[in-house]
Length: 394
Image (cartoon, rainbow, N blue to C red; front, side, top):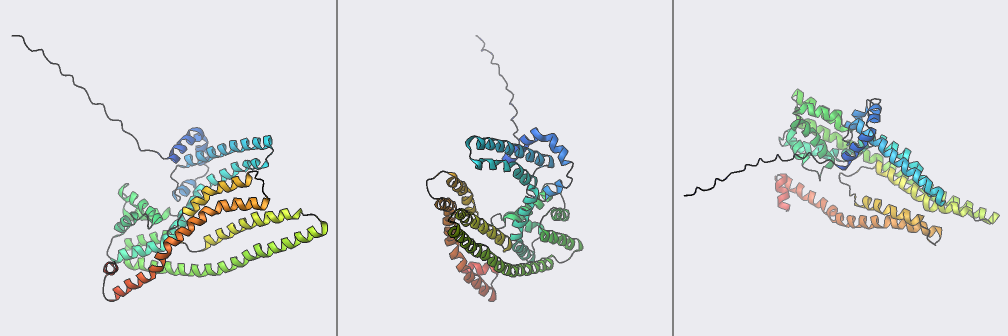
């Protein structure tokens, strides 16, 4: 009998799976590319700014000082090259508007160099809008016996209601859960690197109460009352400031416009030269819109803001702005006032439509909110808990 042929088994060793690192964002990749080019210069300049680390820690920028300075140098170099190219185009075509591109390098350098300060202002302003409501939320949780860490965990999951406060809560929770820092030390670190003064004082006082074994509920309630009193006084001051700014706006636009119109008309009658009307057109179609935007920006900085801001009109305005600039620069065979009007209308028409739609969406909710709060208060009077009052209305 023939023996069966022996079968040989080949064992294959499994290849180790490739471990992929975390995906880097666009800014991280751009920072890495900038550091490869200007790493040495970045290290040298970073050593001359010892406070840059603290400025970055107080901002929303996540980068090392050397990386930030490398990004500043790379952005300035790119803008300088673009400015030189636009200057060459201006000499070749005779269109002097392109020569304005030489203003880009110093502006880009200043903006990127001051980006930590700008980010600090944005972070502080965003938290300032939510701070009173955040304190009220923590006061309700503390009154229900919820611990500070549990309150932070709940707040960190409420990005839609408290977008800025949830980020601050996540910063503290990262120190506690990831780095193993004790809660009191994490609160003190968050207070040290927070650009918002009221939030810093609240955290320092919070840690003091925890260290001394005081009543957290009483402390948070006192801070809530203090915060809403300050907000009410700020609104009163804003009302007086708005009246003063409204008078100044009318003086600058209406009175000055009428005065310039009278002067230029008189000059045209006496000298039979209508050259002054060009300056009047520039003031009417460029000066007044710029002054209006300036006053609106000042009023927006003075008034008390809501925690949620709908950014859709602002984003659409940013998208429509190049269209308005393009219409203004194109050689359209129309009169100058009509050309400027077309550029301005094309810029603000889309944002205006979006704003009106958003206003119609929220008008019904704002009108029904007082009745809802009154019904909840009536339910509380008869002894129902807050949840029971809301369920009864549902």
